[in-house]
Image (cartoon, rainbow, N blue to C red; front, side, top):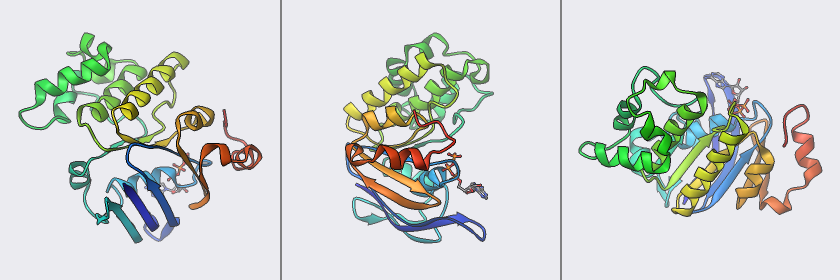
Length: 232
Ligand SMILES: Nc1ncnc2c1ncn2[C@@H]1O[C@H](COP(=O)(O)OP(=O)(O)OP(=O)(O)O)[C@@H](O)[C@H]1O
């Protein structure tokens, strides 16, 4: 179980998250929703060790990992797929896959990525930056398949993709969940996120405005939070 307890975090003198409590139970899908600037990315960064919280704690199975670096959290089973495609654009698909495999397990990692996304196999020697946005996102997502993490933090992974590719991304998320990974999902397609989610958190101005199951979420309250943003 991944737990954020009374987490306060921000940048320099600016506080973005205020005493946030959030739980990602093993094997569950948790949607993290909220308007632009609510602090969703900041929360994922704090949970994966990219940002050290100002106060509060991050716990994995009861172990306090607050302030641990991203490598240590990765070894504890946390995988963060950042906003804007976390791939090395100047490296080939194969070279990218090698960077997220364990030493000695490179070939296994490559075949596992190709199993998840056959299209990566067809483009194994292509420079990542020359692939389409959808293909680059598949490469970024392949990390979450190859590393077999227990917790996958996904930041707007469908952003800017064609509808058909968005479908593929959601199929992949279902595959990850079926394999037993827990997902913490920040997603602009709110309805789709709620469809796959077991639990939902609504973040507003750095505070949890709602936590519960998707069917408890009042559609009007949701729309109110999202005035001016895409809530479908
Ligand atoms: N590196 C940074 N330095 C200073 N302020 C930052 C930094 N990153 C984010 N912020 C600020 O923190 C606040 C929350 O940003 P964050 O990216 O976490 O929100 P978000 O909910 O993910 O928004 P969006 O939906 O627009 O991606 C915003 O006011 C943003 O300007």
